[in-house]
Length: 160
Image (cartoon, rainbow, N blue to C red; front, side, top):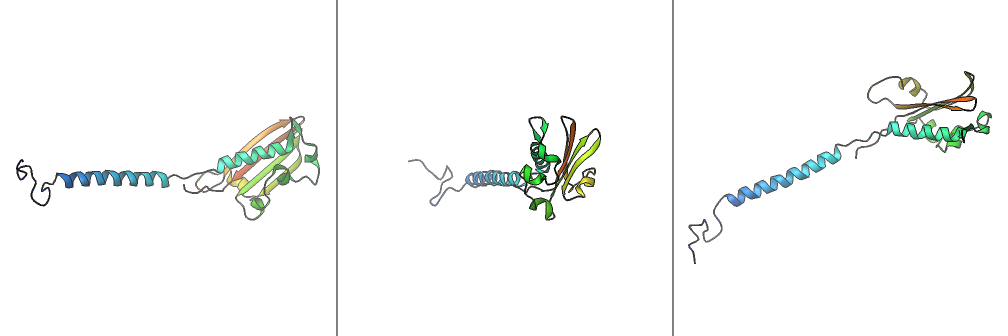
């Protein structure tokens, strides 16, 4: 049997520092990996405002247009744009974070106008900066009518 004292062994355990150094390096690598994973995961924020505004705009177009023509009920006084587009009225009336404006024009004259939600978003859409709503505007030509849509959302997504 070899003499273990020359290899760094004694009667109780290995006496060198190599194992301690390796342990510290491995623990540090694992700790940095876990820290980096948490930091990457929790630093991501989602901002879905522009996508929400686009989706609402698409719903409005679907509510007023059928196969390239203006829906017959749109010009009637009792037409409810929110109900027809499948949008929840509570989101628009209770100090909500949404705004819609839909104008129906014929020969440059306004025929019907719908405006719901937080009304100052129309002005805030023109401004740039943090915390302001994201807006989406679209113009659609249907028969003799032109439809102008402006939607805005200030519903911030959460942190992931």
